Length: 273
Image (cartoon, rainbow, N blue to C red; front, side, top):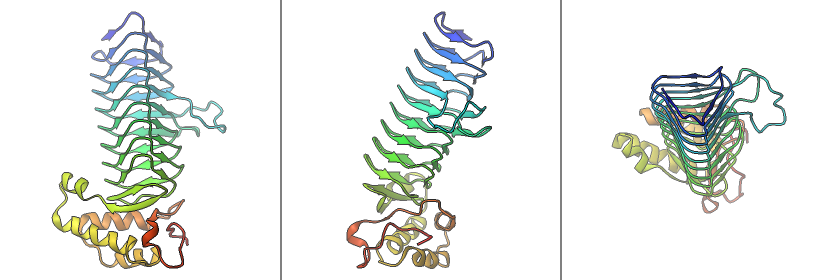
């Protein structure tokens, strides 16, 4: 175990013998750092935080600090970071706000410089959050999704598998799997390139393309379009899309671009509309 002489490590902390703790790092409380993980200079780890194996924590990252929530009064809650996660300079990941709740970063996630992962967020495997993006509390991001730089995600929304959130987007509603969102909770396209890179078959890509057209180009009410898809989608990707859309969303689903809305100018799509 290599712990720099200037690092401050709490006696309650558990540091694997193969971990590397750099200069001026502060580890406060019952933090656990897994094998092969490198914590670089000036990073701050605190609370009931667990860091997996072979992670890279870069300078000035803050992991497991108390949530930015006026309702939090110091209860025990958790921050769990998986294996092979990269957290770049100045990124912040806060622990859960309710007692015994948790914030989870899945394996092989990449959190770029100065992004923020708020309390009780759940990030699946291989999620990428780019520079300066901010996820409010209770955001769920499914595996393989990308949140681009400076994007803002509202509380209690879901980002589906392999979804893409464009740079500077302001997303206040759920983004279905395999879809691309930009601007104000607007879906503009399906993520063809992402699906191909992830190994989805041409049949699956074509089915998602057709689902996109029904949901966001047909002019149908969103709930009517979803009902149509339930009976028509058959591939693995298609069924995953239907499952996501059938969930009782707390904030509804992102809608089409202005040029593809119905004549009545219906509001952003919601299953409860």
